[in-house]
Length: 208
Image 1 (cartoon, rainbow, N blue to C red):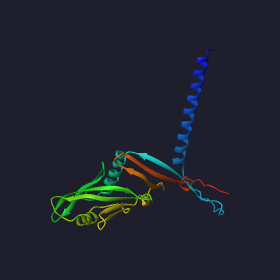
Image 2: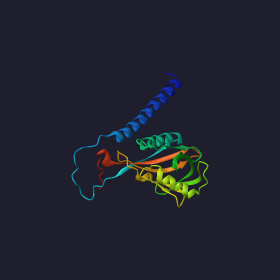
Image 3: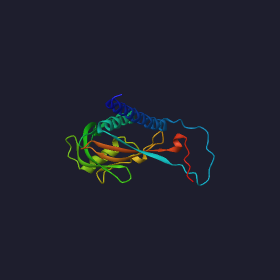
Image 4: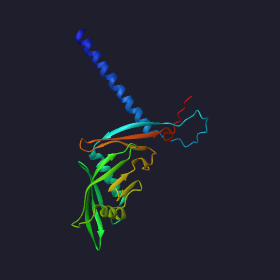
């Protein structure tokens, strides 16, 4: 067999070996995520047996996060007369309507996201308007807090003109713990840390 054919076969073998390795890694991660939870109770062990977890960093785009946030808001506002949405562009924009006197007035808030050391986000107000009404920013924030339904892990703080988003307090059915790694809208670099407790997967990690 000519030498160039031998080299070609070696490269083919190496390519298929590398492809197989990547497939195994993906299958291993999927197995961990979808592993069925055991319904049997685990007997209490000694202090040497410690439940642990694994953490993954997931990078995504602001378009994906935008769709997820608005789907959550839409679900939150079901069976209410309220309506608002969030748009992620160069900053975070909240648009909606607030009841003023006997009608509703459009409200727009532009916010700058600042990631905290614990993985939460503070949305600092950059500009705000309530229709054509000339009201102080804090007063409009008070209207936001009073009239717009928010999840219990989101806190509107009129005094500091900001919104605290406690991502780490989100209740997720699969018991995953989520925190924010980065939230840079200008570079479209959004990353989240997802911690998967072994207990959720019915796995007990032992250290001796």
